[in-house]
Amino acid sequence: MQQSDVLGRRIGAAIIDIAVVVLIILLVGGIIGNDTSADAPDSARFGSLDRLVILVLVFAYYFATEAFWNGQTIGKKVLDIRVERVSGGLAGPGPIFIRTLVRAVDGLLFYLVALVAVLATGERRQRLGDMAAKTRVVSASNPPEQPGAPPPPPPDEDVIAQIMR
Image (cartoon, rainbow, N blue to C red; front, top):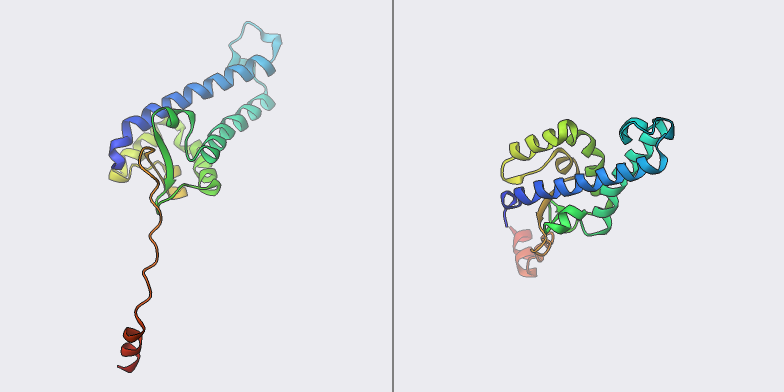
């Protein structure tokens, strides 16, 4: 399946994941928000430490789910897509960590930066985090591509013939 075939599912997965993140923010806001302004919206009740806790939890959501669920967040799992290395095979914790960090830039302007990057990269369909981590999002129905095996060594007579030239 080509990268462009997963674009719609990738957008849908992002929407599902954003809903999960909003749920995390609301739950944390209800638990640790400042009660002195009880009539204020949850986001207005957060202090600096509260915001830091939420930021860490949001990044932990993306990192933990993709790192431990074979490159899938809840949204990706629902829509049957996953992250893999560009060279093939599942992305490990290192590349997942990089794409999670760069998500801060990709998420600017309600993920408009990510959308522009995905559309601008043609058939590769990579956001900035994918480019930095050397990953891509593919259909989870297809088995992970394995990196190509090295070619077998040449027969001994070919090696000897090349040396004798």
